[in-house]
Length: 385
Image (tube, rainbow, N blue to C red; front, side, top):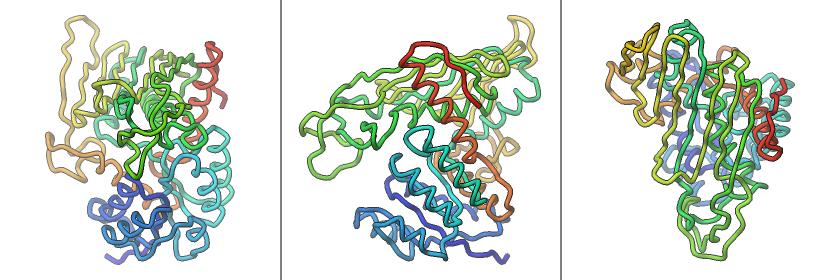
């Protein structure tokens, strides 16, 4: 099969830059029908060591410390933006204006106006986008969304959505960009609650109103001494943490369901406890990322005797069949990003959006903005459309 080469760049080469690079390289293994073949042309990062690693490990043809070099290179048609949040707006708007298709990591900026500017630039340029709401790509989550849409649990009544982690629970984790408002934005809201918001929207529909509470539990963190990862322990001078460690929100969906959304980066003992419990008038659905291939459900029930079952998703659910031949064989986090990469490539090839796009980032941004305002006023807040 002859495929057109697609010049690709990755801007920002931390952990997520590695994930995107691997996803591009694997996309055609799982989606051979895609008519575009990613060609890794430029890796961009201010650290020379990261640039060399990108070229050595993934075969990038060149590297740079300046994202402006990607804008100027007409051979590059698609770009992953995996930088700290503060750079999302400037990088993405410039790239879109230059006609580059964009694979953006959430939350696409620091504040709602950043997402709005990127969305406007994308619409004006007519380029395709993908946004990193990877948990909606889980086959069990796709199946849950379909069951709800078909009415198999009756009318959805309540839902609990959670993104709980302890990556920053150690008070000696060093002060990095994630804890600064001017670089990391609103903290756990953009980092983790954004994923929970997308799961609400993907399963229950749009959020209509909410009330939120947020907190900083570890108010100061030590400055790093020398180089280390953003989650390394440190022992330097204490710095004031500027954004939230935790958020909890009550919400009401436009479709009438009531729910709770909770996210934390300092929840001791929670190792990526991400998921949801959804109840309807005739059934229930539960999913936990740590048991990604399982969906707990009870459908079409009307009595207390209705049984609750755990189902292993199979090749007919979501995209599992692209990766594994039978139920019970696990998928991985990286597989979810391969799905994103493939849908990004499909959208470029066809000119039709596929998967989560900048519109989903904008919808989530409006909810996150309302959460931030509500946590200050302690009042119910409507989501503007």
